[in-house]
Image 1 (cartoon, rainbow, N blue to C red):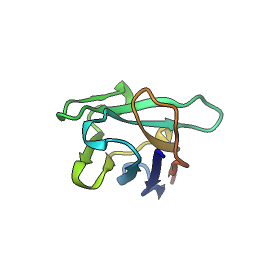
Image 2: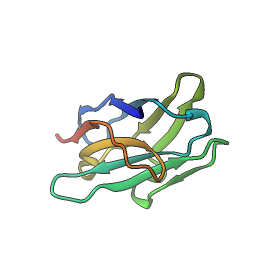
Image 3: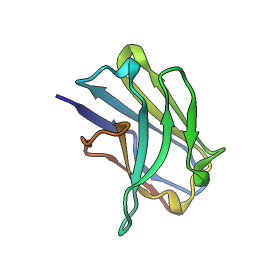
Image 4: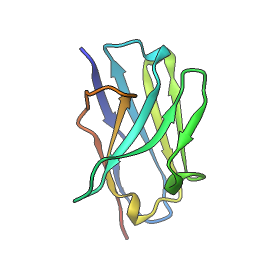
Length: 113
């Protein structure tokens, strides 16, 4: 059974940093293309970042240069380091194996002064 447990969210001031974690299980994490998505209040869920098994990464334009996706294959964990946070980054953040349908509960990130 596929499971994702996201953590690390919270309230942070603009310009601050957070590191999100996602503990994934129930599939072959080492060979999986992993993604982060987010959903802001009143908006559709949007893709944020992708990491391929060999390490190649892609980001949506609005987070390039500020967010870094990484993974710990030995422990089945995906990370998202978020720096220089902006109020528009406020959302619930989710991780997922690419092109699958299961979602976790997400972790809330609120950027506000």
